Image (cartoon, rainbow, N blue to C red; front, side):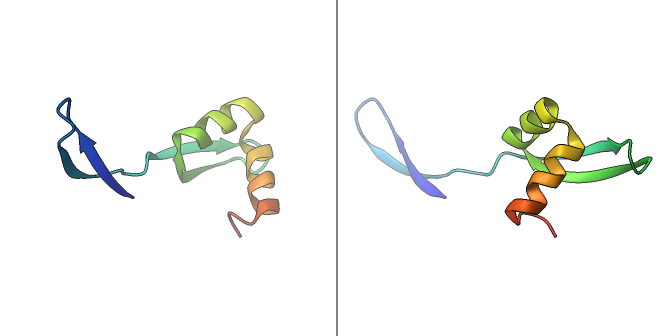
Length: 66
């Protein structure tokens, strides 16, 4: 996504908003294996709050993953 940097004098220059993604390794206890996921910062917070297996189940229901 693009936008503008706006200085104190209201001068505008182009900038880019990058996605806040991380490559993270999670352990699935039910399957006794590690999985590598590319998740956002909000996704990491959701996984920490609900647990990895509940988060994966919810992502499948919503159609984010197959």
